[in-house]
Length: 115
Length: 111
Image 1 (cartoon, one colour):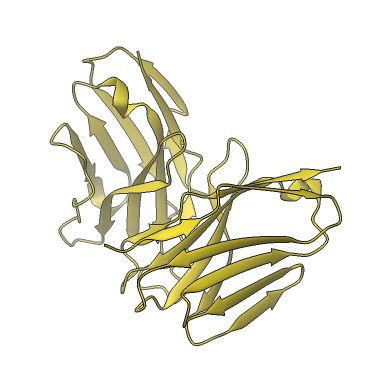
Image 2: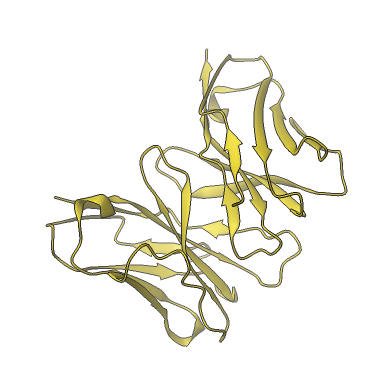
């Protein structure tokens, strides 16, 4: 498709289970971001990938969170041993980099509910 | 650290103008953005302004930047029910990697 695609759109899991969230960025976009949006909170930066450079993982909240980007395209965000506080919408965005406007193109998000 | 603040709610009547305000702390920010998030959807860039500009107009949208006060505003003229959404202010922190985001202003347009 033409936009950023995320799957699943909704995920309900039990506390302690692992989950994987997938992001398929816009073709040709070298920069990819993961954000977390919790109810009543702004966008929380999680991780940033740019081409073949080492990812900026400074936003990952704990070592239960990890992400990878294979072949400079699809990215997977993995949350191990999920906790109830992990419940949120996980947004993926991609952009052309470098970009003058810094415009990020967002997917519709994956809503994670941890019971 | 860097921070972006905006009011959480705004309610206007259809046809009126809406003004959404944002303040930020990083004086080195070069790009300032307004993103719109409609219910159940991802964020979409609405408009942006460079730090060397005071104003930018795009159809019904007017962005005003006061660098001295680190204040950014978004004015929507002739607000329509389709403008109901959450509006996020974001500024770059010296680079484009980590945009600093406000919490979003939820705009409700009443018929």
